Length: 258
Ligand code: CO8
Image (cartoon, rainbow, N blue to C red; front, side, top):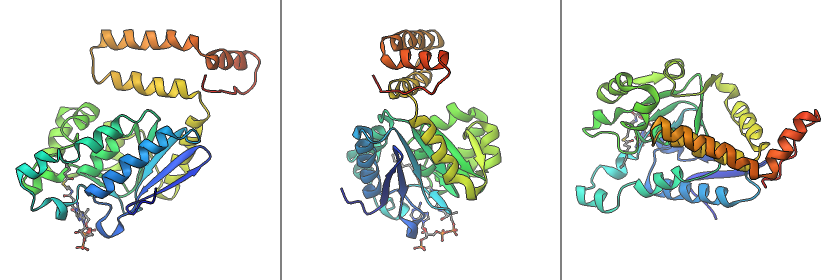
């Protein structure tokens, strides 16, 4: 499928998806989110893809939802369309790991989109924020919920109430991003991480996603039980036999996703 607002490349079993609306700092409009959710669903189905990297430009991962597109809409318009709900939920249902590689601005919906991914690698130039308050609204796709779970109430309140931006170092201290790298190395680091994930058993990487995400949805007792059963279940796979045999035989495992 030909896309206009994103660029998709598949290399070494990694799908690299770039947001591509440079004229609007990759602001998320309906077309971009439709294309992005379709591309991610395609990557999820594609046997040649084992991990996904989502990125923007050097200046902006995404500067938020498209304010021009939203500004004249009524309550009925956004409610009836369930503005961005379907697309963001679809992204959240992707089963293959998604790394967000963030350089420059990740604001509003941009920060929220990065948080829907499984983890964030940030360039030292990255700036995160939930500035919706400056527009007379509030975050709408996770900025009060995912952000609070990731960085805690105090910082989430600060970000959402003041609309201030957090730099990469603070984002790493707060637990919003998994690592910060020099801007010039962002893509090589993100792609290297994705290729490393792509080497693993996909049954196991998908199970990791399910289990870690479950920790946000349930009690510790239920989450631990889910994890234990998931661990037990993987003993039904050939990849568990191969992974453990390879360790004992001091060789690289050859996983076959079975
Ligand atoms: N929407 C539309 N256009 C944008 C956006 C945006 N979010 N951000 C930047 N642009 C455009 C600018 O209008 C400008 O276009 P033009 O050249 O035609 O005037 C171009 O991008 C370049 O931007 P600037 O000239 O402003 O660049 P600066 O380097 O001076 O500033 C900033 C960069 C600080 C990122 C600045 O552009 C900015 O503050 N942008 C808006 C950030 C923002 O408020 N984001 C939140 C948007 S609301 C949101 O995300 C809600 C999400 C939830 C939706 C949920 C539905 C349920």
